[in-house]
Each structure stands twice: as C-alpha cells, then as structure tokens.
Image (cartoon, rainbow, N blue to C red; front, side, top):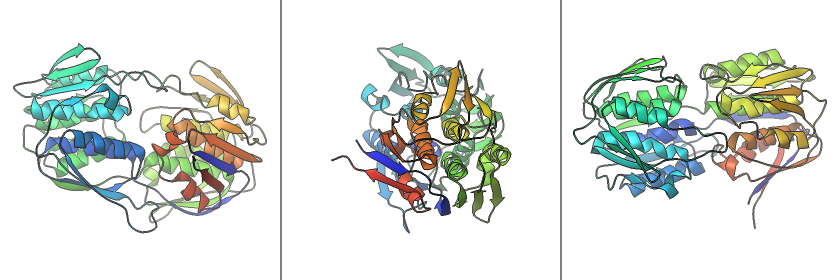
Length: 429
C-alpha cells in the first residue's frame, strides 16, 4: 500500500486550487438515471470513489464518457458525460454497495423511473452505523412498498411514485438527496420537511432544475418538488469541495505561512473561518476564493461542536483536532453527528498530542510541538488529519493506508508540495 511521508516544519506559501466536491459529484452522477438524455458534469474530481460510481452506473447500462481536466492538473476537474437511455437491470448487489455507501443513492432514482429497485443494505461503517431508515421512510411516503430480504432493500412502485409529505425526524444529507431525486419523477407535489441544507443539496437541486425539475426551497429546511414531468439532459459544473477547502485552510493554520485558496468560496466554510479567526488566523477574501495566513505565534485553543450545515462540519473535526493539538490552552471538541469518529485520536497521541476522549467529547490540551511518527489512517478524514499533524511535527511522519485519503482528496501531496510542504508519496512496490 502507498504511504505519505512528511517532514515537518516547513511554512506554506503559494496558491492551492480547490477541486470539485466529491460529495456533490456522486449524487449528481446518479441523477443521470432520471433521464434518457445526456447529463454532462464538469469540474468532477479524479478520485477513486468517482471512478467506482462510474463503474456502477455502467453496470446499469449507462454510457459513461470521461474527459480529463486540462491545465496543470490542480483544480482542473474533468468532464463526465452520462446517458441512461436504456437502463439494464435494477439491482445493486452487496459486493458493489459495500465498497462505497454512496451506491445506495441509486435506490430512489431507479424505483422512480423503473418502478422497481433492489439495492443491498450498505452495512456497517468505520465511523458509525449510519442506518438508511430515513431513506426508506422517505420513499414509503412517496408510495413505494419496501421489503427487506436477505440483506437487500426491495422498493416497488409498479404504478409509479406519487408526491407526498416527507418529514425527517433528524437531518440526513443522504436521505434528502435520495428523496429529492425520486420526487422529481413522482406524480404531484412532494414536500420534504427538515431537509438537509448543505451546499451539496443545493448543487444537486440546481442540476435537477437544469434538467427540467420544478424545485423550490433549496438551502432551507423545507424543499418543495412539483414532480411528474419528464426530465431532459443538461450541463452542470460541480461546486467546489468545501471539505478540501477547509482542510487546506487548517493546513495553513497548523503549518504557518500564507496560502491563497482559489476556485472556491469562503461562504462554503464560514463556520470554520469564524473559528480560525478566534484561533488567530487571518482570513481575507479574494476575487476567486480567499487567503489564509498565520505567522509567529501558537494557535489559540477554541472549543467546537460539530453540527449540520451551516454549523461546524463533522468532516473537518479530525483536521481541526490536529490544529488544536498544537494550540496554546485546552479545547473541547464534541462530535454530534457520527459515533466512533475519534479513531484518529490514538494516532495523534502517538505523535505527542494530549487528548482524552469521554463519550462524544474529546478534550485537547495543546502541546508546544508534535513529534513525527509512523501512523495509520483509519478513514478518509482521519488520514487528512494525520497529514496535517505531520506538517507541524518535528521530524518525519509516515502515514500508512493512504488509500483512504485517495477516496476524497485529489493529489493532496502534490497540492501541499507546491506550496512548500516537504511531502512525498512512497509508492507500493
């Protein structure tokens, strides 16, 4: 397996272009199942999960064409052209879904277009169970009958889905996306109450509108879909990745220096930027993104609670903890979204961090400096936190199992290397 080697202590200076958002691109690709005309997506990042989704769609008979990005390769997303004019089959098997939870997104579009879908339950997850009951309750509210048999969800709607009121008892990004797509072909009005407000939801909705859907309320907790119309092809650019944006902002804060993040927007990470200002980091908007700078002092400790958008993102919790490990003072980080999302803590402790976990809260007593060490990534966000910790650590850090990193970050070692980090990938021989 590949490894990432980091020699800490280098300040970062330069420009990092931000790639398109993986968490937006995946459901956007699935939206191609809703029409027989071509859907063209630009600014799509070159990631393992994206390639896997393309293979899944091909298994349903979707024609998939990929054009690589142009320019330097950094932040220059590729183009996917997808056409599902003849869907072949309606089953996503266990071996497919277990590799990537986002495969479950095909359930709503398939039952909405074909009247039938059979999709394996995703099973457990390294950062928590993440059950799919809200997805199923949402589709039931649109008239689908749901059966569970031998580890599969079988959704049946032979006469088609019908609009209805979907009330989520808790906010779920994935369930909102699944129901939103299904509702576009359902007959009549669908009202989604307590909908997720994340930018990726808005991006999906805007693409569906470009395909002919009638949707209002995007970005609010109540989305209304006037369904039943036929969707057509469209062109859509994937929005910038807010988690990549936030990760490189934190990287600058932990390593020191000044970095401009381009092809993004501060509005995507406003909760993080508010916290970074309290930490002592300077942030200033530019025409194409924003600059982050920190020089000459240790970060100040700040406590945070993760929360659904527009709150502090759970997907930046691990990276922020690495920053707090080097801060002056004590902070408390409470994880309210996923259980088991502190698996990076033992690895940070190996590097000299002083962190105690009790229930859903980690207490981080900042230390003057971390020490490089061999560490192991346990999931996508944990892997990025270890890379960031390595930037600030004395000596050499080796991050193992970086295939997790490759699922969500497009050439992280290249992007950090171009702004001065002493970092390289060690290829598996």
